[in-house]
Every structure is written in structure tokens, then in C-alpha cells.
Image (cartoon, rainbow, N blue to C red; front, top):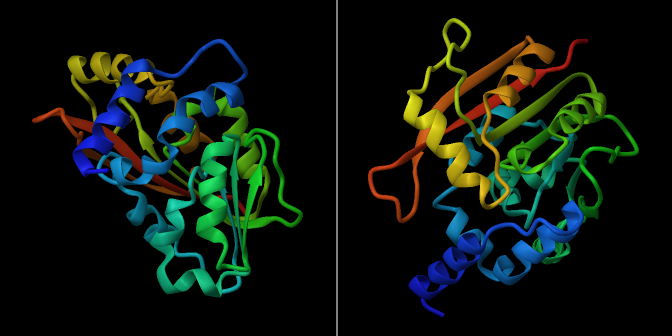
Length: 241
């Protein structure tokens, strides 16, 4: 299948949108199942900042890492040679179609486990040194519970990283980026059809709960929308000792 045909197949799935009739897990499977085989190629051009997030987290050798909403496990590739030096990596997701791809990707890494579980309630056996979410928070209905759960599973001094779409508040805090009215109106409505909900509230809660943090606010091009650039942020916060 050519890259153009792959893109067309993904775009048709996006146009159909995320089903609304079942549970969150059932809706994810119905939406991502038909596009799972080609999921990564299209989203490599859409989901910016993932490599930078892993670089900012920089988990040291022997660290225990958890990715919530890890999908196909594509983010493993951004750890490079450092992946082998980690004590464990747990990739948690609810969608069986994406989990199957993640398990194939992780098959050669004995320190990587792929777990079908709810990110709002899953806890690793031992506290994590690093927890991160990559374009997952905007897709989880109970996103507050995910943030709270992620912080709770960290060891004291551990890091929480998030990269995701967002829009600013109309009056953001001092030093933060302020988006124009069109950006604040357009992107939440554009993405909502596919179950993605950019919001100013996510980043605000992360900042409030983890005051020791670093944030980058950026924009990235969007495939097949020439001239349009979607806002995203990279957040890394440290749990208090």
C-alpha cells in the first residue's frame, strides 16, 4: 500500500470519528482497530514533541518507567540505546488493536511489559521513577483521575512528563502563551470529532499539582491542513521529596 493510500485510509477513519455508543475501551477499539496497522506512520507527522519529552525526562540507567496511554509503543524508539539500561518500562493502554502492535514492538526487550489496563486506576508493583503520557491525556474522559494516579505512582522526587495538544486560557498565567480567539475556538472543535479534547485545564492542573516543573509551549504543522499549526505543550514536573 502506498503512503498516499495509507494516508487516505487514516483520513477516512478520522472523518468517521470516534464512536460514542460503547464504553471508552470499546470506542477506542472501534476507532483504532481499522487504522492500527498504519497508525504510527501518519501520526509521526502529527504528534510533535515526543522525542523532546523523552530527552527532557532523561531517565537514568536502572529507572522504572511507566507510559500511560502508550498505544503502539512507538515512543520506545525515542529512548535509543538507553532503553536497554532501564530496569523496567510498562506500557499501559486500553485498546487491544494498539496493544497488539505494542507487544510485537516490545518482543525483543525483556525489560518492557505491555499491559491492558485503565490509566485512571493502574498501579505498578513498585513506585515509578518516571511516568509519562504522550497525546493521551486529551483522549481520556476522566483526565483528572489520570493525572492524580500518575503522580501517586511516582516515587518522591520522580518525574511526570506530558506532551499533548492544548489551547490556552483567554487570560493565561504570567509568562504563559496566550492563543488568539480563533485558535481557542477552532482546535477543540476540530479534534472533538475524533475524541480528542484540547483544553487549557490540563496544563493548568499539571502546573498547580507539580509546581517544580518545566514547560515548553509550541506549535506544529498538521498533515493536509496547509498553513495551519496546532498548539502543543511539553511538561515535565517533579513530585515533591
